[in-house]
Image 1: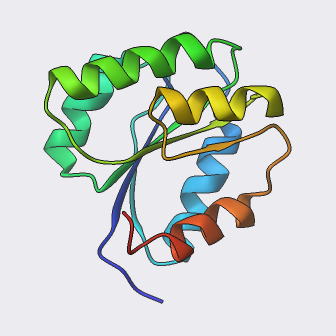
Image 2: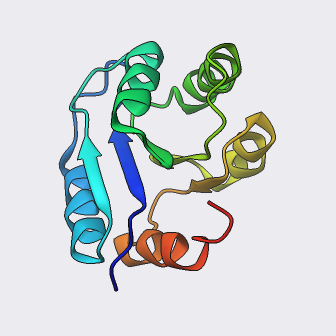
Length: 131
């Protein structure tokens, strides 16, 4: 299946572990998506700038550091400040109890610890109309 959807994946904050997001990037590419990975240790402002330049249809944040609530709150604020009205999702080391909080903050989806890569790919396949 081929699509023109552009997905920007990023690692905000000081988290230095990116194997999982790289595996996800490859799976999304294999599924036909255009994917750009920003690399490690990006600020929310950097991510938004790159998203605009890439003309991303959706932003995916990978957060393993435990700072997901703080970083996602900043993401929501900065998205509004920059008038960037595209969906964003978050995954990584996220306890299930925080999923609802992340959705309330503004994430379109939040993937808890243990989510399989294929579940994330399936999310994008099934939500293309909403994104």
